[in-house]
Image (cartoon, rainbow, N blue to C red; front, side):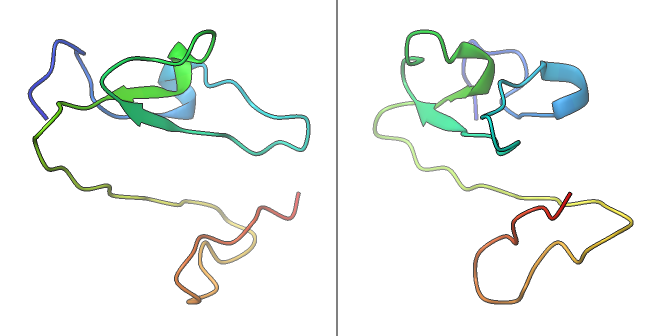
Amino acid sequence: MQTPQPYPSKNDKRDKLLTNADGSVDLYFGPKAPAGKEANWTQSVPGKGWFAVLRLYGPLAPGSTRSGSPARSRR
């Protein structure tokens, strides 16, 4: 996406993402960041299409259950 945001992606090592009490992460996509959630926000452009790519890495459990949605971490 061509936005003023330098890296329209999220990386837990680089971005210091906010995590929920259960260890999960909420990601936000839109033209403006929700208040207090800027670290987990990726800017989009109104009227422009985009697509998401999800990469999961881990030595323990499979990243997908092949059910169409990512598997929850079992840590």
